[in-house]
Image (tube, rainbow, N blue to C red; front, side):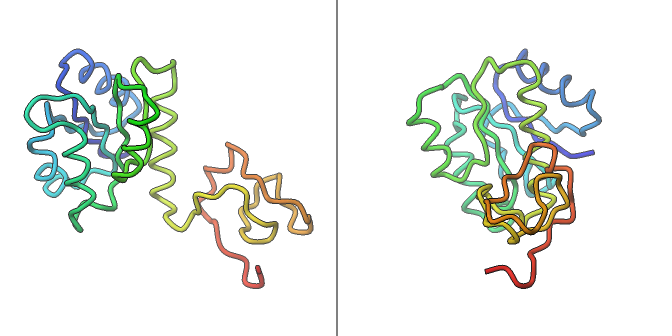
Length: 172
């Protein structure tokens, strides 16, 4: 499975995330604040980082900016996991380069689903963020794409498992 770096200052929350994702077969690396995130990310090469915002010494915003500014770690998806729920915080996370944003407390299954989604998206980096693609632009074999439709190809949730997305040669 994946190697995940969890950066969380609250020991109870960190242990809960570690247990939740560890039981899914992921290898977990832990850090208690943003101080050593860049070093850990370079040395351990995680597939994904889950990071809190409000931490002592170096907060999640500063740590995220550092990861995204460094060519060695800019490709690593980062999901911010925080009690901060404002739209401004979500927009700031996106501006800094976060892949996703999960508000604490999350719904049952939400964290696992978002982790899986981020890992699948990373596995298929050519996969576009725009899910309203013109028909024929991508062939993925999902049941909602017949190749002849004039309607936009809407990617259903179960399509993320397809690892063979390829641009169609004659797409316009």
